[in-house]
Image (tube, rainbow, N blue to C red; front, side, top):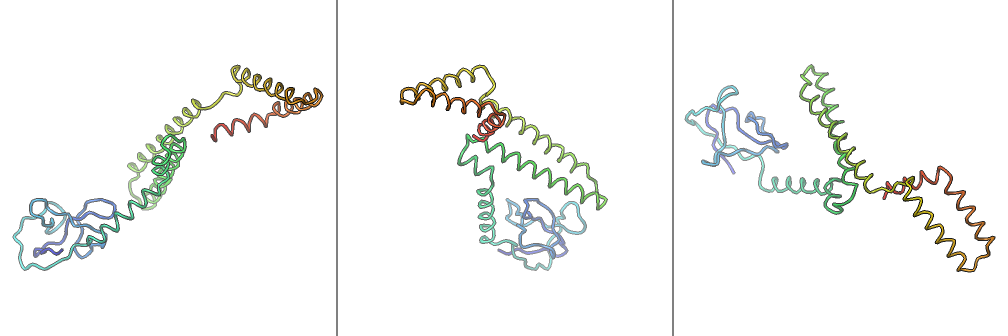
Length: 221
C-alpha cells in the first residue's frame, strides 16, 4: 500500500517493533515500522518542520512511499510472537498444569530476570550520564514483586507440606510401624528376624539425613 507524502513533511507517525508510537524521520523508517493511520481518512500522520504539533499545511508536489510492513511481514511477526508466548515457561505451566506449584517458581525466575535486565539498563544509563531514577524505581518494584511471590510460594508450600516433627505425624508413623510389624508376623517371619529388621529401620529413621531427605521429597512433590 502506498501513500502520498506532502512536500515539506519530514516525519511520519509509526509504531515500532516494541509497540511504541513515535514520529520517525521519513528517510530513517525501518522495515519493522508500522505506519499509524488516521481512522477517519485512512491516511498517515505527517509532521512538518521540527518536532511538535503536526502541521495542517496543504500538500504540494507529492511523492510516493510504501508502507513499511506488508501483510506477510505482520503475520510473520504475529506468528513469532505467538511462538514466543507458547515457549514462555510461565505460560506453558499455567496452560498445562494450572494447579502446579511450578507456576510461582517460573514467575519468580521471570521477575528476577527482569530485575537483572533493569540492573544492566541502570548501569548503562549511568555510563552515559543519563538519569537513572525511573530505572531504579522499576527495579525496586521488580525486586519487591520477587519477594512477594517468594513469600506466597512459601505459604503455598507450607499449606501443602507435612510437618514431620508434629505430634500428629508421630502417631501416624507409629501406626504404620505397628502395621508393618503385624505384617511381618502374619508373613511368618521369625521373631528375631522381625526384631533385626525393626532395629535397622529405627537406626535409619533416627539419622538427621533421613529427616532432611524426607522434607526435600515433600517440597519437591
